[in-house]
Image 1 (cartoon, protein in one colour):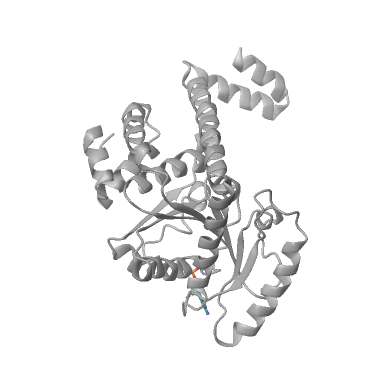
Image 2 (cartoon, rainbow, N blue to C red):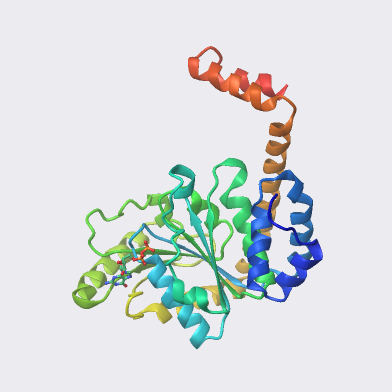
Length: 325
Ligand code: GDP
């Protein structure tokens, strides 16, 4: 590792003091794939854990161009300036794993919000290998909470598998969509629609207002066809504009209404408990996989097995049996 390391106590003190620079470095530490960083990362997380949990965690998704960063700027501004919140935004960027490029990583996104002390913005790559979204995002959420951020927004682009993972670590799931952009589902997987707590038709401004409202009604009808979720929440639909800010406070009002209802019914606690168990299970799979891959000679044997499977010389089942034994 080339960057200067801090001691565990320096990371912990920095995070708990709400120091954004140290929070960013602590997240880099937990994202490290270097096994030598793991004990330090664990110490930092364990010390921060008792200070975490007191936040509203919201997943926000929508295809590129739907206006997520504009919307999140507007929402962040509302939360900070009107509601006096501190807001952390974790953006999961699936493109970096495929092309090395980035849909979300571009520096100009949410520039104004990022300049505010009460905001923390962190793009993170969704690595395919060893966990990716599951492990790092969950732990980044906890560190942001320990640093005093009471609102956590986790942003994904709505085209991959990240959404299911994010759904499993947040309290509320918001989908941004556009009116009348051809195909009703706009490349959003049907499964994602079934997970939403709120569907917002964005860019409801200028001469698009009526079309947005029409689209909202259509989606409202479509959502009624899904089976009710087991927490008793009926998904809502709104129109909004990140550009003008219209409807943005109303989006947050729905998040708060949901939060209150979940607390009253005990579903909030139950969901967080389930998430803690999921976290443990993820850690077990990741630890086992990492341990397996670190065995001496395993990389070479894995490569050989991949070639044999590709050529049809061995079937995947017996290849795995051979490697595991
Ligand atoms: P993202 O890719 O989902 O993060 O979308 P961006 O926030 O970068 O916005 C994509 C484009 O849509 C930009 O050209 C924005 O100026 C525009 N845009 C974003 N939000 C709105 C909105 O509420 N209304 C209108 N009319 N345009 C918007």
